[in-house]
Structures are given as structure tokens and as C-alpha cells.
Length: 394
Image (cartoon, rainbow, N blue to C red; front, side, top):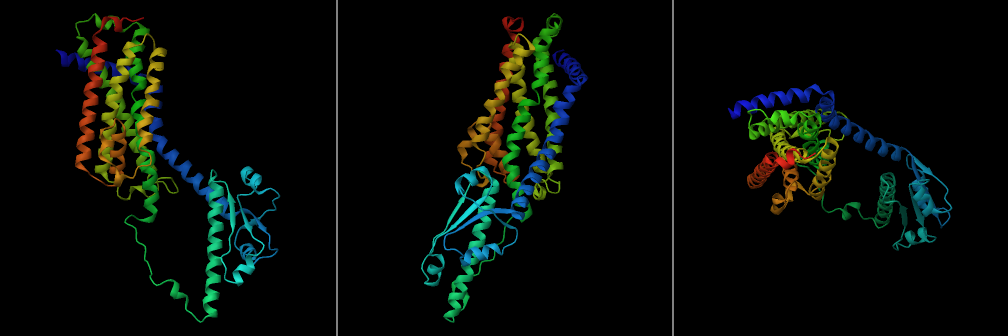
């Protein structure tokens, strides 16, 4: 009887959920397009910024020696745009110039006497464009320095190879075009999937609890022969299906994003196969079940739809804390204690999956804790659903 009632409630609630077009838009369409749009916009933006700076290096050169060989060398470089500056610090801060190079008065004399010469580069470390310009300036200075060293060795009839006794051939374990995409994916994916896990079931949970209170449909439902536990399971599974669809939509969007040319995650699909996608989907689904049960319990407690949204909204902010705490962790060097911290363990496990790491100890610990979270959240929802003072709280 109980399972039959739960099935009837499940079908009824699912039909009610999908009658609302907002559910389709917020729960399926937005997660589906979020990753491709985010990847494309951020990838194009970063590429555009880099090219804009490199094609128009707005720099100032303060040449106190008058006409130094270094200044003349830099002027011959491609895409250099020299701008006169009367106040370097202010012009760098305002963005009028991206970086400035100050050459001391005795620079050429120091070079001729083979004395160490000092230079000063001013840039804005809070500006991506300024940092790119600074790196380009350092590259020009390095090229100039190598030329000077080559001339000094030539005068002494010494081969330049004396400074390079060892030749190092660089080889990466991951293809160069894949490395950056996988790195960005390991940063963004855990954060975005946690957001979906909280936001995915939110609308359905609020509607099936506080929404029914406002519409006056919850009390008649409780007067039927259906047990409260059966009603709870029916609602919970309907919310879980909504979360599952959100997870599938977000992973489909991720799959599209990894194959976008010029996107932020371009090339990340190299070592990410079906197994990893399924594991990521499973983790996201289980996390959705945790938040779905919590949000249903809070929704049952709330007096109104608006009050439920007010109570549930902080869950999003709370979930960010442990997720951001693991934001910059390297997947290959994550300490075990992180896998005992709620949400941080999920974030770390996702990072390992993206890197192709299958640490069975970490997987077991994380899934064990997720099972505890699900049981705890379902028991909490059951407790709320069994209290008359909570259900009829108006």
C-alpha cells in the first residue's frame, strides 16, 4: 500500500512540476546552456584581451641616458606603442599605459664596462592587461641581454654554448592544448555543479511544501488514507528526478563546452571518458538528493512560498564556503582530511576525476559521507513532515 501511494504521489507531483514552464527553463534549459555560454564567453574574452595587448603594447620608456641601446632595441620590436608619460604611477593605475620601463643614466656605460645594470618596470598587478605587457617587456629585455652576452663572448672568442652546457627537452604528460582546458575545468566544474545541486531541486522543493500550504492543497492530501511517510517519499523522489534532469542537462552542457573551438574548456575532453562523466553525474545526483531533502524539510516548515525561499537561500552561500576552500587545490596532492569535510570532499573528488585519478580510499570516504548526508537529510525531512505544529504552521 505504502509503495503504491508513494508512486501515485510521485507521478502527480512530477506532472505538477512540469506543467510550470519556469521549471523547464530554470531546471533544464539554463544548466544545458550555462557551461557552453560560460566557456565560450570567458575563452573568447581571455583570448581577445591577450591579443589586444600583444597587438598594441602601450608602454612608456623613461630613458634617463638619452638614447640607450636597450630603448632603441625595444622600439624596433613588433606592436610597440610608446606613449609619453609625465606621471608613470598615475598613468599605469588609470590604464593610459600598461607598463613603464625606467632606464638609468649610466645604463650603456655599465653594459660596456660589464657591470651589472639595473632597470625598473612599473605595472599594475591587479590588471591582466598590465601583467601581459610586463611579461612582454621582460621578454624584450631577456632578448637584449642574450645579445649583449653573445657579443661579450664573441670578443673573447668563446662559443655561446659555454653558457648552455645542458640542453633540456620539455615533454608534458598532457597535450599542451588540453592542459589549460583541464585546469580551468577543475576550477569551475566543482563550483558550478554544487550550485546546480542546490538550485536544481529548490523550485520543486519550495512548491511541494510551502507552495501547497499557500494553495490549500496540503491539508486535503493529509486527510486521505495515504500515510505521511508515503507522501514524503513521493515528493522526495519527484524532487530527485528534477535534480537528476538538472544534472544530466548540466553534464550535456559540459560535454558541448569541452568541444567548443576557442572555449575556456577547449581540449579538456582528451582524457575525460564516459566513466568519468558517469561518476561526476552520480556524485552530482547524490548531492542533489541531499539538498532536495533539506530544502523539502525547510519548505514544509515555512509558512509561505516567500518565507521558504528566504530560509533556503542561505544554503547557496553556505555551500560556497567549503567549495571555495578547495578552489586552488592540486588534484594530485590533496590531503585526506579534506575528504571528511562536507562539500569540500565532493569538490576534491571531482577534481581527481577530471585529472583521471581514481583513489578508491577517497571515493569510499566521500560516498560514505554522502550516504550519511542523505540519510540525515531524509530523517530531518521525515521529522518535519510528522509534526502537526510544523505542517499546520501558518
